Amino acid sequence: MYRVRRTQSKDEQRGFNGRRKTILYLQVLQKYTHFSNENRRESEPVPNAASLSENQETESLKENLKESVVKTEKEVFEDEIFRIVPARYKEKAKNIFQFLKLQESFSWNSDGEIIYKNTVIPGSNIAFLVNDFLRNRKSAPEGRYVFLRALNDVNLPKNLDVNKKLYQNNKIIKKPIMYARRNAWLKL
Image (cartoon, rainbow, N blue to C red; front, side, top):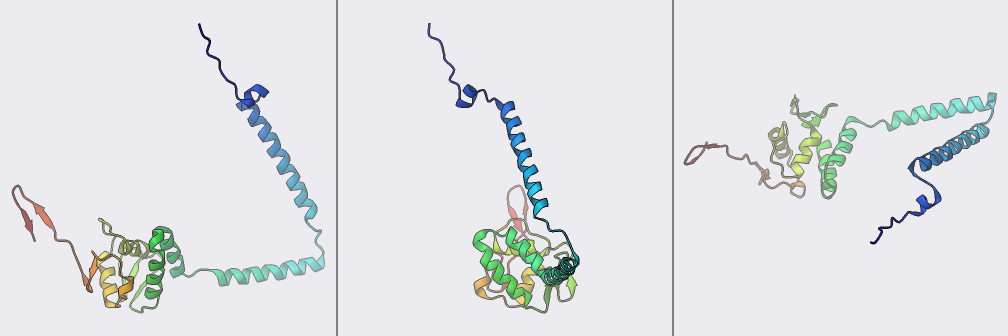
C-alpha cells in the first residue's frame, strides 16, 4: 500500500507554528515602540524662555489658521455629496452645487434641509436630493418635487440636467398612480 506523505511548509520545518510566530511578532513590535519612544524623548528640546514665547506665537498662528480653515455649512454638505455621488457624476454635482450657491431663493441650513422661498422643507437633505437628481432612483427622498420645482424656477442650465426622467423641458414629471383591480388598471 501507498502511504500519503504530508508535505510541510518551510515554516513548519523550522519549527515556527502560529503561536510562536505571534510571540515573535509581539516581541519585535514591543522593541520597535520602545526605541521609537526613546528617540522622541531625545529629540525634544528642553524649553527655555525664548522657546516658550516662540511656542505661544506658533500656537496663536495655528488658532488663526484653524478659524480661517473652518468650513462653511455649504462646503460641508458639498463634501458629503462628493462622498455619496458616483465618480462619473462628481463633476456635474460640483457644477450643480456652484450654481445653487449663487441662488438667492434657494439655500439649505446646517442640518442640510433645503430652504426654498424662505420655507424650510422638513426632512429633506440637500446631499440626498442632488444625488437623486443625478441618478435614476425608484424611491423619492423627502422634498424631491419641491427641489425640482426650485431647479425649474432658478433656470438650471440644460448641461446640468442629468436625470431626464424627472425633469424634461422644464416640466416636473410625476409618475401616474396606478391602482390594481382584478381585470384592469385604472389611472387617476
